[in-house]
Amino acid sequence: MDILLLSGPNLNMLGVREPDQYGMQTLDDIVSHIIALAIDAGLSIEHHQDNSEAGLINKIHAAREQGIKYMIINPAAFTHTSIALRDAILATGITFTEVHLSNVYKREAFRQQSYFSDIAHGVISGFGAQGYEFALNAAIKHIKEH
Ligand code: DQA
Image 1 (spheres, rainbow, N blue to C red):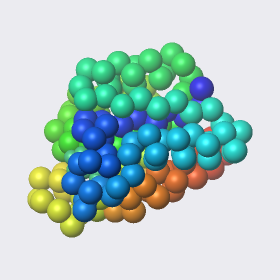
Image 2 (image 1 turned 90 degrees about the vertical axis):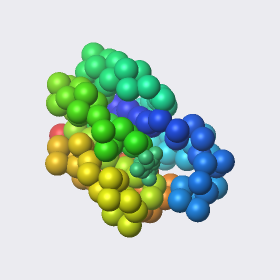
Image 3 (image 1 turned 30 degrees about the vertical axis):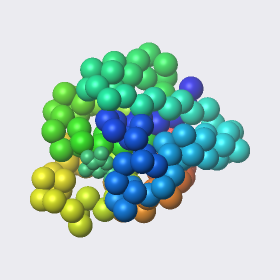
Image 4 (image 1 turned 135 degrees about the vertical axis):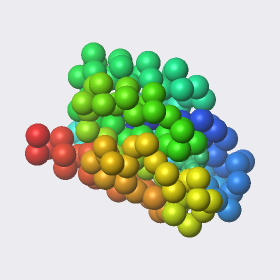
């Protein structure tokens, strides 16, 4: 497996959840499109959504064993709270892009603090589902160059 796409808590509610903020597409819509684009680029990709911090951490640990080359992560609310998730990523040393559907810098002050941005390859915020395409392009380029 080349790429791990990880979705944090409440992202399973996309399509229903605050559509003004997050759009009308479901997580399945977004993920199936990204999987198709990755396959077109000749790369394998796995998606995992979890509402629990433990589930996400275990998946990140497993990514190391699986030889995952790049991660695309929307940590959702854990972005602003989870040192444990940050430490899990640091433990694997896997390069990743942090993605947010909404522009977190246009929102509440507590969303402007991220435990991931300073250790990410890059951060994409505010482009909705298109942000995942940008992140995938970054992943493809990174994998081909390394
Ligand atoms: C989010 C932004 C977070 O602040 C929020 O808690 C989310 C989604 C986004 O994709 O815009 O759940 O990560």
